[in-house]
Length: 315
Image (cartoon, rainbow, N blue to C red):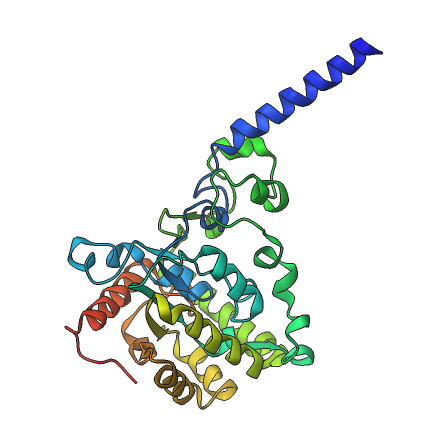
């Protein structure tokens, strides 16, 4: 029996050792989220859904020209509409990721009607928001590397895959960069983009518009998020472009959206920049998300606005 127990313990130690070593390989190729939980707390943050995660390029802001404008580096902590709509779950995650020593940080909060909506039957009941049972609501640690908690609880493949470049459908292949931005590696020929856009618009028209409504509770949590960040630096609400068909749906969903963002910003000592007025001058991966070059252009434009060297766009 003693020999058997020793063999079991040895086997367990070998398995544990393998997992400890495998965890060291986890990086931006592991999945679309891991690296955001395996980087230090940040003094400046990009927040929002997937438009923010893909469309705001922190490296544009993390330059020598801007290094004295705010406490950086800027880190992209945007996720998806499923994980990071504004609400108590995202608020708590932001608190975990925020370096509260910051006094001159920069906080870019990407806003659109979708991240301020909820399912019809629970629009104003925060206890029933679905994200609380997803990644941000169940994760405990947000700034640990390797983040074994994340890998144990949320990594969906065998740990042997951590040392390998993920293999799969190239349409969904992505790399999470060190600054938190999700960079896609997908076909961008005109026919593929058109088909992808048609599917996305159809999804928003037939599913999102049917299932979701504006949530005053989420709007309140956005206000409280701005209030929480304001002592630590400058807060900027940004509405990124989307294709015309999706913007039209957004207007039906929240016809007074820009007015409410302007009012919130004015009340909280923040600012609101509407870049959706440039919708026809940029390119998208699917009509909802900016492609890489357009995301960089919008980030550069936003950086110029922040420095006061560019002309206003929208409201």
